[in-house]
Each structure stands twice: as structure tokens, then as C-alpha cells.
Length: 297
Image 1 (cartoon, helix red, strand yellow):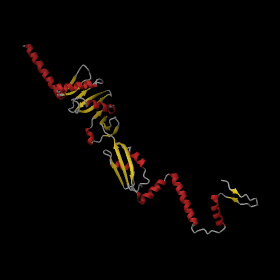
Image 2: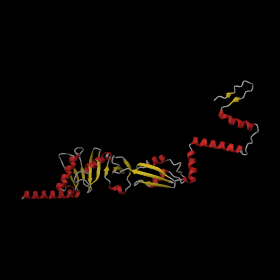
Image 3: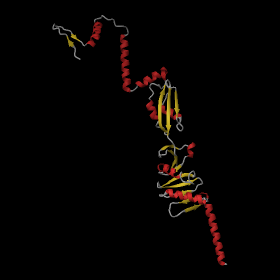
Image 4: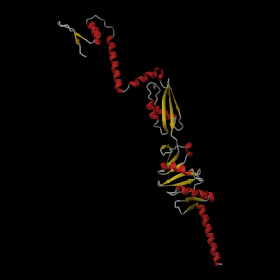
């Protein structure tokens, strides 16, 4: 804004300042004229103010102002004293506390709820997390965990997977031992639908111990007594229905066999246990010998 000048035309005319500068100008004029006594320690106060302003500016530029405010408010009685975690079954509270990152003097005022929520959401079992402040000194964490569907074996490693095939975490025992076991490359993705199909087949539901994916093209079923049912690549439902019928009519699954091969649509192949094979061989040799003896007579 430009300074205004008086309309007086005589020499030495005094320029007129804007209204908001007139009072400070009069005070300065009186100070310089010795008409105002400067209070003691004025220079110290001014220097302190200058340093305070400079420090505040530096904190703002360096991003440390929030830390300073947090430290002050924490020591003023607003430090976080308690963390409540609800909804967790597989996720340990220790892991949650580590992700929150408290140090004993973390302030409620400076605590970043959004950042804590994002860190907690990175834990393997966490589907979603909600973090909120409950004044005066509590952080509440609500967790929604992922639902396990099956165990997936790949090479020599076991993982817990969701129904869509996504891996949740490595298998560590516990109650997850009762989950269906799918084995092999591609089993995690194709397993959920196939497990559901098997569960609808009478005689197979509840008896399958493992679902083995072969060359990512077809399945083998391993029953609870160790019998393997080899299914074809196509017409899987028909093959399973046939296996169920044979068991219902002839108690096939309970016989001394190790495998039932249904891969060929026009042929059924059964593999006997070693003991059953030896017994069958001995009976065959005995019958052959009897026939030879009868022929000599």
C-alpha cells in the first residue's frame, strides 16, 4: 500500500501513513525521542521470542512439531495407558501392540489412528481393523479376521488358505488340523469348488482325508483308510457316483485294496494290498495245481 501525503503544499510536508501504521509509528517516535522508558529485560524477552519463533519454524519445516506436542501432552496426563483388542482369535495381542508402536509416553493427542490401522491390517490374519481413541487414555482396536477354509500342501510346506485360494499364513497346528487338506500345484485355486463337489457325493462325504491335484489337471482322493481313488480329468461327477455305487453294493472301500482307478470310462482297475495280492496269488497257484492234477487223472 502506498503512503498518502498531506494536501498541504508547504515545504517539509509530513507523509501520511496508512491508519494501521500510525499508532506503531507514534510509539516508535516516542521511543527514539526518549519519551518512553524501555522496560528492563526487554532485550532478553525479544531475544527469547526470536528464538522461540525460529524453533517453531524449524519444527514445522522438519516435521517435529507433532512430536513435541505429543511429548508435552503425554506428560500433562494424556498418555495412552491401555489398549483393548477385540475380535482376534488367530492374531496375538502382542503382534497388535507391536504394530501400534507405543513407547510408554505416547500421547492420545498425537497418536495417528489411521497409520496404526494400516499397520495392523498388514498382519496375516487381519481382514480389516478399526482403531479409535477412547479418552482419557485408552486405544480400542477391533479386528475382523480372515476365514480359513483348507490346508494347502505345496512340496513340504503347509499353508492355511481361504475359500478363494488365497494363502493366509503358514500352518502352525492347533484347531486347523481338522480342515480339508488339498495337495499339489493348482490345488489352492481349484480345491474349494472340488471339495464342495465331493461333499455332495453319498459315501464320499466325510471320508476323504486328502484331495490331491495331479499335474494341475485332475484329482486323486485319499480316503480315511488309505484307499486312493484316481479320478479322470473329465466327467468327474460320474466317476465319483460310480465309486459311491460300488461301495454301496459291494463295500468296495472296506476291502483289501490300495487304489481304485476310474480314469478310463470303460474300465475299472483295482490295486490290491500286498497281503491280498499274495493271498490271491497263492489261491491261483493252488487252483492251477489242482487242475493239473485232475488232468493227469
